[in-house]
Figure 1 (cartoon, rainbow, N blue to C red):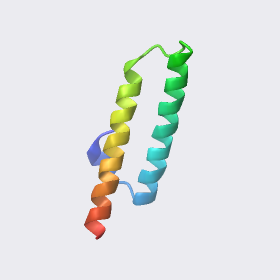
Figure 2: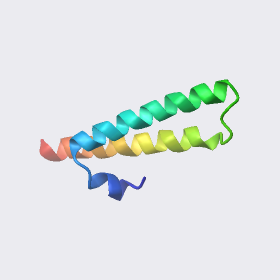
Figure 3: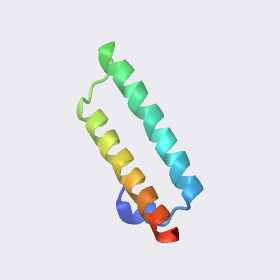
Length: 65
C-alpha cells in the first residue's frame, strides 16, 4: 500500500490496518517456520507496509499537536 493511500485514512482506520498487518506478519512467520510459505519476500513487504502505516500515524499525531 502506498503512503498516499494511507494518508487518506482516518486514525482509527490506520490503527486497524496496523493490527491487520501485525496479524499477517505473525501468520507469515508461522507459515515460514512450518515450510508452508512459498514467497519468502512476503514478510519483508508486510514489514515495510507496517512501517509506512506507523509513519503516517505518527505524522497525523504530530500534525494534531
